[in-house]
Image (tube, rainbow, N blue to C red; front, side, top):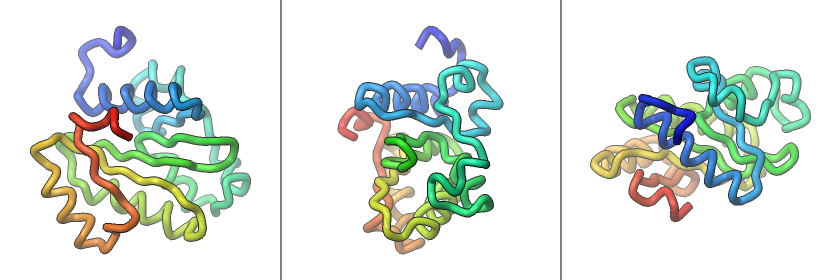
Length: 148
């Protein structure tokens, strides 16, 4: 992780998901906010522009939300997997982005993951149950990222 000196756990996990996605031969998009805050992310992220919305099958408003998801694994114009890393932040924002993604593409089979520290697993599971997304959003802990 030499290109991410003195960075947060959140960014280290994003970098790990990026590497894992590349190993699985996906194009990997890193969220627009993360690209704006870390030059290394902007340089290596697969670029998806708001004008790509129709190619991916979304309207521009929904697609703008989707582009903010921390990590997207892509095959062509298809989102295969989506990841929100919630280190210290509230899990709700990630769930709201996933709701936009899943509501915008109800017929697509997109794997969605909330990635949390091990000690926050129960909290994240509770939020997913509250939003009634148990069958659609998985919780994965930092210690098990390699199992994705």
